[in-house]
Image (tube, rainbow, N blue to C red; front, side):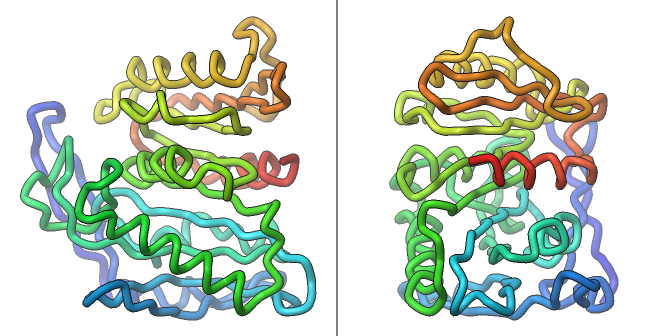
Length: 275
């Protein structure tokens, strides 16, 4: 099933191209590699709505203590595209890797009509449909698999990164670490408690401005008790800042725009494994 491209023009951008893939497209790319595995499609009934996610389950998930990584796509994205571009199952095959599918949602910077899928922006928005979805997914995994509840992680890009911040603000104790990308915390900053965090930004991001994201990063460094002058190389383009509270911050700044660099996958997994 071929990709469908939607061109959305905004006042902030001359144009933003969102590639929207079918949830069941890219079948060849969804086949497992030597160390990974093909994902399964899981469904949950949330109120009157059926919610879906692609889930990689390690062979020993029912018997071995198993970490969990949630990965939330950006506005206009799909669970299948998130799975094929992250492939955390290849980098950490012992972890459950789950990519949920959003619902059509009005965007803040693009798609204000809500024609494309995304995630709620704040607590109480859209009757907390996506927070309820997260709760149901995690509850199911804990009930049916041997989840290590001290090693649950979350990442997300753009609108999915904003939702990652929302999960941190409202479900913080459930996560060992988070890694929002191309997003800002905004009004959620006051609700965040110290936690290991990796924030990825493009220095030429024209949608979620790099200056906005740096404001979030500085607030995170302050929140976690980090010295902004103490950064050390964690990976190419990424610096780690030690924390007086034991909650390190990694800031990953690449030369691109709103895009997500594939080489960031290993950096995020390495960061999660540390925490």
